Image 1 (cartoon, rainbow, N blue to C red):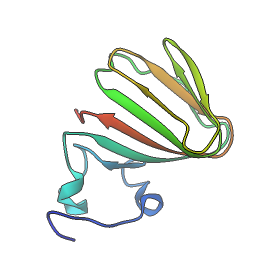
Image 2: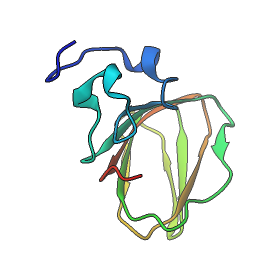
Image 3: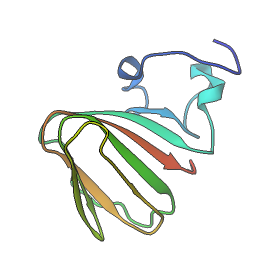
Image 4: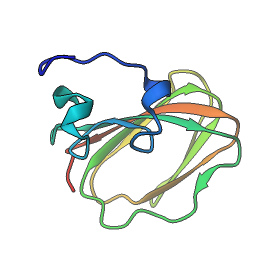
Length: 117
């Protein structure tokens, strides 16, 4: 490991920070290049039925969710979208609340920006 680069495995490291691999909350001993306030990146492994029962509130970041595998529903305060085909994605901006549910065993990549406490 170096201060300017890092290599790892998203699945192996997904438990360290609830799936998050990059963001302001990463301990620099796990790769200083992974600690940033620019964005957050998550490797989400969600078994069928897993959900976020509560809604986000006061969200002031933008978000992108990309389906790697499975079937994954995202409920937004402005509507609902189900990602069903590998590569399907959804993005939304500040002020939109969300919740989600894995309708099949699913893997998703989530990117949020900026990374703020």
